[in-house]
Image (cartoon, rainbow, N blue to C red; front, side):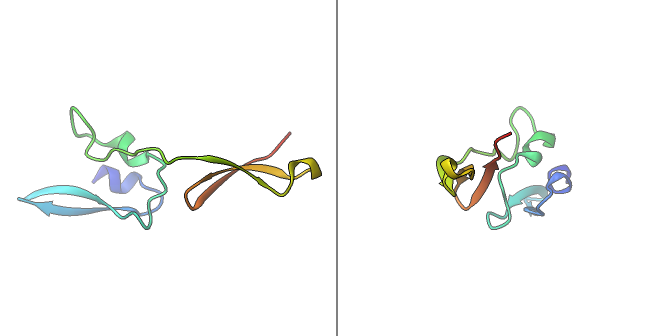
Amino acid sequence: MQCAAACPYGAVEEMESGGVPCPVVRPDRCRGCGACQTVCPAEPDSAIVVLGMPQKQVQTPSEEEGGVAGISAGSQTARIIPL
Protein backbone atom coordinates (compact mmCIF):
# COMPACT_ATOMS: atom_id res chain seq x y z
CA MET A 1 0.00 0.00 0.00
CA GLN A 2 1.56 3.30 -1.15
CA CYS A 3 0.36 5.37 1.80
CA ALA A 4 1.80 2.93 4.35
CA ALA A 5 5.15 2.93 2.52
CA ALA A 6 5.20 6.76 2.42
CA CYS A 7 4.52 7.26 6.13
CA PRO A 8 7.79 8.01 7.97
CA TYR A 9 6.14 7.24 11.33
CA GLY A 10 4.63 3.82 10.55
CA ALA A 11 1.18 5.21 11.32
CA VAL A 12 -0.67 3.67 8.36
CA GLU A 13 -1.64 0.01 8.40
CA GLU A 14 -3.66 -2.07 5.94
CA MET A 15 -6.99 -3.71 6.76
CA GLU A 16 -9.22 -5.62 4.35
CA SER A 17 -12.86 -4.67 4.08
CA GLY A 18 -14.97 -6.76 1.71
CA GLY A 19 -11.79 -8.06 0.07
CA VAL A 20 -10.55 -4.52 -0.60
CA PRO A 21 -7.37 -3.25 1.13
CA CYS A 22 -8.10 -0.10 3.13
CA PRO A 23 -5.71 2.17 5.02
CA VAL A 24 -6.12 2.54 8.77
CA VAL A 25 -4.34 5.39 10.56
CA ARG A 26 -2.97 4.83 14.05
CA PRO A 27 -3.50 8.16 15.83
CA ASP A 28 -0.89 7.32 18.46
CA ARG A 29 1.79 7.33 15.73
CA CYS A 30 0.43 9.90 13.26
CA ARG A 31 2.11 13.33 13.29
CA GLY A 32 -0.07 14.90 10.59
CA CYS A 33 2.69 15.33 8.00
CA GLY A 34 0.40 14.45 5.06
CA ALA A 35 2.84 12.10 3.29
CA CYS A 36 0.16 9.40 3.06
CA GLN A 37 -2.41 11.75 1.54
CA THR A 38 0.08 13.02 -1.03
CA VAL A 39 0.76 9.58 -2.55
CA CYS A 40 -2.76 8.12 -2.23
CA PRO A 41 -3.93 6.78 -5.62
CA ALA A 42 -7.66 6.83 -4.67
CA GLU A 43 -9.77 9.09 -6.87
CA PRO A 44 -11.43 11.55 -6.88
CA ASP A 45 -10.51 12.03 -3.18
CA SER A 46 -7.71 10.51 -1.11
CA ALA A 47 -8.63 7.62 1.18
CA ILE A 48 -6.83 9.52 3.97
CA VAL A 49 -7.41 13.22 4.55
CA VAL A 50 -5.08 14.97 6.99
CA LEU A 51 -6.71 17.83 8.84
CA GLY A 52 -4.67 20.61 10.42
CA MET A 53 -4.43 20.93 14.17
CA PRO A 54 -5.02 24.24 15.96
CA GLN A 55 -1.82 26.07 16.76
CA LYS A 56 -0.95 28.63 19.39
CA GLN A 57 2.06 30.85 19.94
CA VAL A 58 4.09 30.02 23.04
CA GLN A 59 7.23 31.59 24.49
CA THR A 60 9.88 29.20 25.81
CA PRO A 61 12.04 30.71 27.35
CA SER A 62 11.45 34.45 27.22
CA GLU A 63 12.13 35.88 23.77
CA GLU A 64 13.46 39.06 25.42
CA GLU A 65 16.22 36.93 26.96
CA GLY A 66 17.32 35.52 23.59
CA GLY A 67 15.12 32.45 23.76
CA VAL A 68 13.12 30.96 20.91
CA ALA A 69 9.44 31.18 20.07
CA GLY A 70 7.56 27.99 19.41
CA ILE A 71 4.35 26.96 17.70
CA SER A 72 2.52 24.32 19.70
CA ALA A 73 0.17 21.90 17.95
CA GLY A 74 -1.35 19.51 20.43
CA SER A 75 1.52 17.53 21.89
CA GLN A 76 3.86 18.45 19.03
CA THR A 77 6.02 21.53 18.98
CA ALA A 78 7.81 23.20 16.10
CA ARG A 79 10.44 25.68 17.17
CA ILE A 80 11.17 28.93 15.37
CA ILE A 81 14.80 29.91 15.81
CA PRO A 82 15.58 33.58 15.15
CA LEU A 83 18.41 34.22 12.69
